Amino acid sequence: MATLKYAKFVDTTKCDGCRACMVACKNWNDLPVDPKAFDGAFNGYDSHEKLTANTWNIIKYTEKTNNTRNEGLDWFIAHNSCFHCGVAACEKACPEGAISHTEFGSVVIDEEKCVACGYCVVNCTFDVIRLGERTVNGKKKKVSTKCTLCTDRLDNGLHPACVTACHTGSLEFGDRAEMLAKAEARLDEIKDRYPNAQIYNPEGVGETTMFYLLADKPETYGLPVNPKVPTSLKVWKDYAQPVGKLLFGATTMAVVAGVVSNQLFNPRAKGETHEGGHDHE
Amino acid sequence: MSKMSNKYNKGQRMIRRFGAIPRLYHWVYVASFAVLLVSGLPKLFKGDEIKVIYNIFGGAAGAHLVHRIAAVVLMVAFPFSLAFDWKGMKKWLRELVDWRKRDFAFISVFPKEFFGLHAEFPPQGYLNGGTKINSILQIICCLGFSISGLAMWFPTVLPHELQLWMYPMHITFVCLSSAVVMGHIYLAALHPNAKGGLQGIITGYVPEFYAREHHGAWLDELIEENETLPADKKLIRSWDSEKGKVV
Ligand code: SF4
Ligand code: SF4
Image 1 (cartoon, rainbow over the protein chains, first blue to last red):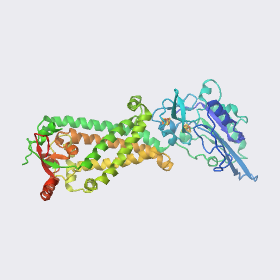
Image 2: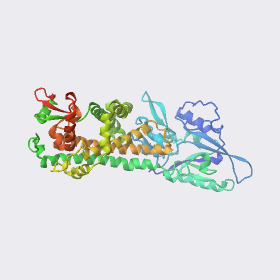
Image 3: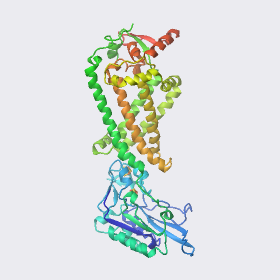
Image 4: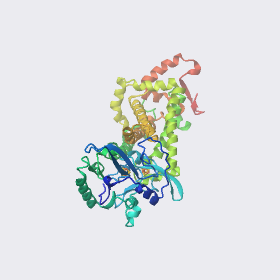
């Protein structure tokens, strides 16, 4: 588990849904547009229903009555992208060691190592990773892709592009303790207006580098209530894999022991054929 | 083959043991299993050494492709065998569910047999307790890694929660079946008591002494049945040492 020192704090109560973060992400990461005609298939406000290989963050809109105020409908808007989990299921699932944590707590993919098996896609706790085509070392190749938390910018002392673009202060990046304290203070401020407000920094995935201050329950935002590293993934990597290896070893040893003991005790191993022992017509 | 067989077959009556389709199925299974194991191994475990295997296939994408082709071969081989030799395959499957005292008696002395100590067991049927377990385990594993493998190939078909379990399931059945295969290769090809028997799955015939020792009860039934068969359908033939083949 990575020790998280930094955080990208997403204060959903300050987001006005302008989508500047989406544009900044495309811009910095050279991601092509994902053309999408209006189809009314989801709520009619979101630009895309889900993250894609070329769209690493989206703004999700939920319109809902806020029962504490008799003022009708409220908007619950959230910037959605990779959480950069402390215990990242994607990283654990990857058979190639292509996914790792950086010193910033960001979870990044090594495109050279990735073999596009998609195990990370299935195992990601938040349905974030996608397979897409990229040019790696001059060759077109399918790889897994997602938000990098602009690790290349962090390396150079800059903030993630989305954070820099945000004009309401809904997205912030900085020292983790400082960000968490800020979130707590803000939670106190909004409690009256949003009684279900909460900080979403799930322990089941070892906390996350991107964490939320939500104005309502996680369900409102389509977020899992108790996200965790899948049990099946632990069974796979912590039990099935080592036990499988052991089984290979044990069988080999048994066969070797069998060969040796036959040499010692079985008269036939010394080249005697059936003529010696058994009678048949 | 013939030179080696001569040593065991000389002066022996030759007993028909496996038909053409079951033999073909066995070897297609062997070949596809081997290719699947090698092409899948670099994904099964972590470590740079194991990733070297990708080079055999010209990279990970090549290994992927070969793995899938071999998977299809392995999976369709079974229904094909059923379709082409229903009788022969049925005989095998039937044996697997037919458990008698003699099978358990064999299993109880199996460890002795494995390590080459003197083991006494009652005459065995067409399959003995050990070969039955081998087949049964292999069938269960084959179902296990085929189903999970298909799910991994098409990861959005099953409900997500269930899909997640396909990955540990795949590795479990692969490791288990590999262990069974290793044991089987040892007992059927390398073990001193297996001498003369390996040719059964290649040519279809085994020398009588082998049939007597390993499958005595079956041999008695077969001798009886052979009496009633017309000359060209005889299950018991003889060995021509000159030509080095069954005649
Ligand atoms: S949200 Fe998904 S992709 Fe991002 S770090 Fe967590 S498991 Fe990996
Ligand atoms: S798709 Fe790439 S990053 Fe994802 S698990 Fe497979 S090799 Fe790892």
